[in-house]
Length: 233
Ligand code: C5P
Image 1 (spheres, rainbow, N blue to C red):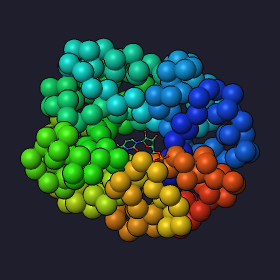
Image 2 (image 1 turned 120 degrees about the vertical axis):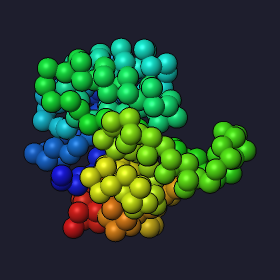
Image 3 (image 1 turned 120 degrees about the horizontal axis):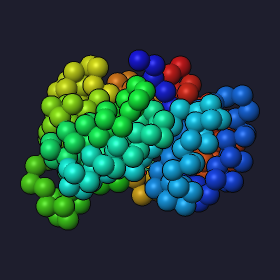
Image 4 (image 1 turned 90 degrees about the vertical axis):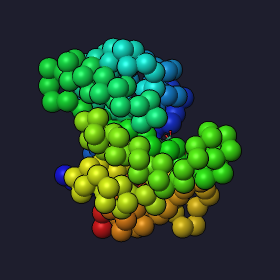
């Protein structure tokens, strides 16, 4: 499986997104469409960006009762996305329902299905004091990853800091998709568990997800190339 850099297109509308993607000319980066763009433009934005030749990760982080997630995934499966996700904290029944819905709705190859473990904007203090999880952050990530693997998912979203341990718990082929990427000379913004593209490569991430370090750069194409150079070489 090829490692790749996924650009988080956290833009308010389609026009801004197309203007951004045009800067890459014939290069077709793997892009992530999250809540901001999906909620403003609707599902058609996924089909349109796919038609431009990009791979698309639809990052809606489903988290609801199993029946609702099964139906939501059945609907998402018709969009032709390459990757979709749920929250592992929804539990095994919800994740199994997500696999069922995605498989049932797919006339084509099923998209990669991954589970968010602990958001990269959450640190140990918030996990303990606000979310009231008594285990350490590392143990929580390990446990959610193992649950996702047992539920039939293909991988998890975690911090690059945790990619190696997730692989040691769930196996080398279990995917680690890692946001929280920053250059050594960049801002952390609202992210807490961050790492550079180089660190993510050394620690075994399969995909890095990069938003503001690319979209907010003076030269986004150069910033993307810097991610590719650091992560893939
Ligand atoms: O701008 P930045 O690189 O921080 O963006 C990270 C992207 O990855 C955002 O679109 C965010 O929604 C997403 N994400 C994350 N942490 C997770 C899952 C997804 O930051 N655990």
